[in-house]
Every structure is written in C-alpha cells, then in structure tokens.
Amino acid sequence: MPTYEEARNIVLESVAPVGTERVETGRALGRTLAEDVAAPWHLPFCDNSAMDGYAVRADDCRGPARLKITGYIPAGGTALTVVEPGCAVKIMTGAPIPAGCDAVIPFEETEEGDGHVVVKGKVKVRQHIRFRAEDVREGDVVLRGGTPLRPPEISMLASLGKAFVPVYRKVRVAVLSTGDELIELGEPPSPGMIVNSNSPAIAAAVRETGAEAVLLGIARDDLACHMEKISEGLKADALITTAGVSAGDRDLVREVLAEAGVVSRFWRVDIKPGGPTAFGMKDGKPVFSLPGNPVSALITFEAFVRPALLRMMGRKRVVRPLVKATLAGEVRKKAGKVNFLRVGIEVRGGEYFASSAGDQNTGILRTMVLADALAVLPADKTSFAAGETVDVFLLGETLR
Image 1 (cartoon, rainbow, N blue to C red):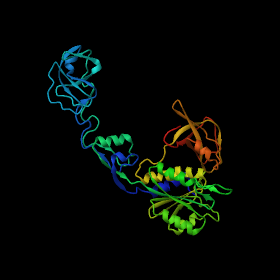
Image 2: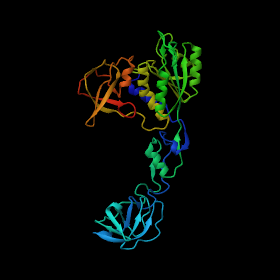
Image 3: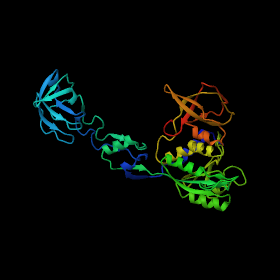
Image 4: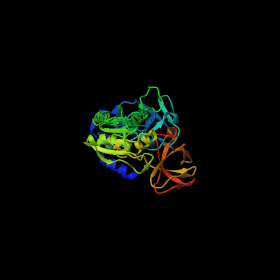
C-alpha cells in the first residue's frame, strides 16, 4: 500500500499531455499554452506619451517657462515635425513622441493661453514617456509553454497580435457512480436509498480544472451493467468511478476494470480519509476509482485526480502549494496514516490560522462545505498542540 506521496508520484509519472489545438486568443482563458511565444515586435512599438499633456524639451523647462504651442498629436496620430527649442506640442496618452522632445508635462501642471503654455515647475528628462521596447524587445520569449493563460497573458498575446494561440487540448473525463442504493437527482428519496451526489460533485471538480466532464450515470450492481458503463468510459481521455472498489461481495469495479484491460497501479493508499482509492492505466488513459463516501471522493480527487488532469492539459505546476497555518486547537490522530483534516482558515496579520471545520467523520458532508483548506497531518505523528504550525493546502481560488 503506497504512502500519499508515493501514490501521487505514481499517478503523475503515468500521465502525459493529451495533445494540442489552436484556439482564438479571446477564448483561451484558463487554457495552458502549448508553445513558447516570442515577440514579433517591440512593446511599446515606439516612444509614446504616458499622459495627456505637452511634449517638450526638458532643457527649456529648468524653471518656470513659457513655450509656443506648435502642434497637436492625438492618440493614433503621427509625429510629423521636429519640435524646435522654445516650443511645445499638445499630446494625448499613447501618441508618439515627436523628434526633439524628451519629456511630457501633464496638463494639470501647466496653464495655456494665447497660443502658449506656461510651465510652472522644473521638468525632468524622460518623465511621462513610455520608451520603445522598455517592456518587451522584438524576439524576446515572453510566455513559455506550460503557462496557464490568465487575463494578463491574454492581454500580452493580444498586444503581440496573436489572434490564435496553441494550447493543450481539454481532457474529456468520464464520471461514473456505482451502486444499487443510488437514485438520480429529482427522484424522491426512500429508506436505504442515497441521492447520487458524487456524479455532479466530481463533474464540477473536473470542470474546475478546465477539463470536460462526461456523465455516465449509475452502474447497477451487476457485471453486465458495470462492463457496459466502464467500456463507454474508457473511450474518454480519463475515467473516474466512485464506490465499488472495496472488498464487499457487490464491489465489482476492480473485477470489471481488470476484465476491461485496465492495469492496476495501486488499489489502496495509506491515507485517511480515502484509503480505498485505486488507480490504473489502459492504453495511456488513467482510471481513478474513488471511494463512494462523498467526503472521501472529493478529498481523493483533490489529492490525486486534480494534479493528473492538470498535467494532462499541459500544466507544469499541478500540486496546490502547501502553506503553514497555526492550529487554533489541539488535534489528535492515530499513527500510521497521513490524515487530511478539514479546516477553516482565518488570515490575521498576513498569517494563516486553522481551526477544525467541524465533525471530521467522513459521513459529515457539511464539514467539507465549511472547509477552506485541508491540513495534511503526517503519518507518524499523533498529537498536534494548539499554536503548532501544520501544512495546509487551500481549496478553491480564494478564502471566503
């Protein structure tokens, strides 16, 4: 039975990016860049004004000065003439700096009248000018393959004229729940029956990574139904099943996966919750068999599936970073397994403080709802005092 880190390494060493495609830059948000991008031109393309004001010669403005206004350059205009000593040109933000000028004075620092502008104070050379290539030089590699595309990267790509961009393809992930006890959403519950919450939850977690979820419904507890559903799921880039992987007489997933040609890499992990988690490969496609308990399913998705899907979509950094948090209260656990503790997080003075999100029984889904993070408690330690720091990884994008 592998440890948490061993199991995650097995998963990540088994998967690879699934392929690339070209998409419109405006639709590439959240995708991962597949190739390095070099600048085809300088940014800025030319020296231009950073303010609305007057382009001047700084030597003319070593103290209060009165300059003749000899022109006007709007944004998108062209600087056609040289500005002579003792003169100024009215200029708008983004307009090219005319020859002869080496500074811009904002309107609010001047007074205009009778075709002249009065400069009130001293002017510094190069002030309020954005210089050619000060941001990016032609030929510079500005974005590396493997970079996730956020709004700033989209802005850079657009500034460089990239209408289309090569990205890694979205992974198609089949999601299958198993068990006769499950009912679909919308069906009235009855004693002994459980609403299938895993399928929509795991599908949502898949989509949160940027992948596409394909819902396969419920596999009932017979071999034929399992084989039909799992065979369909193996047509996707990855398959996730929930429940049916333990040792019960109706736990059929392992048997059917083996019959379908899935090669098992592990079928239990030394963690709590989520010990009965299995992983295998079929024709280069990963198959994750997660526990049926909704809390355990979500935690093992975070631990193993999410990093794998991100790697399959070309990401370089696939594991949520661990941060240090100070425990608000004492925590105890049994030795032998890494424990994932659901915690709420407060930020005070730039530091994280963690407190239990509630009952840690895996049957208590509300504690998962209230959790901001998972504290990763080492296998060999049994007691953690209030005020002690522990490693946590934050869930979601922001703290509430």
